[in-house]
Length: 150
Image (cartoon, rainbow, N blue to C red; front, top):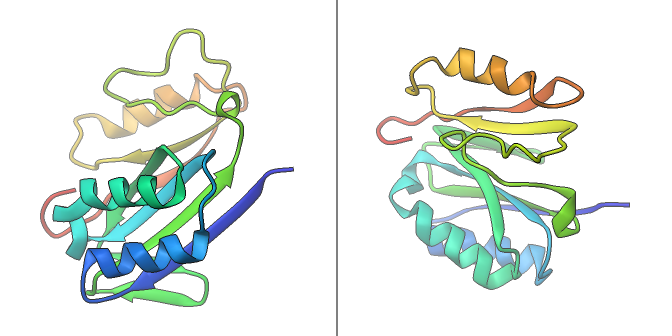
């Protein structure tokens, strides 16, 4: 059975938010991480992911930015905030890839979690195409949203 750990935090800085999430999630070492942060932190995206890798031991992270983010019983809007979740999965249970390079040919995918940039040309067509490449046809996820860079 897959276990999930999650945390969310708002704060004055990206470091404060990331440290609070790391403290709640703890050190896991293996699995797949999902991170969502408000666009107030977009300039620190790489630093956030590196801090989460170092603090949790989880190397693979996916996610996106939003003008606001929702977490258990909380909405963060117009403030720095991070929501993170780790699925404790074996490395062979998932595959992280970029839409720029496409799903690897040897992939045996049942389900997809997709985070897309709405400024990508033909994003709707790309998402439709992706749904034909997973056995179930099911995709979940969302579009990035930000006042500036996505």
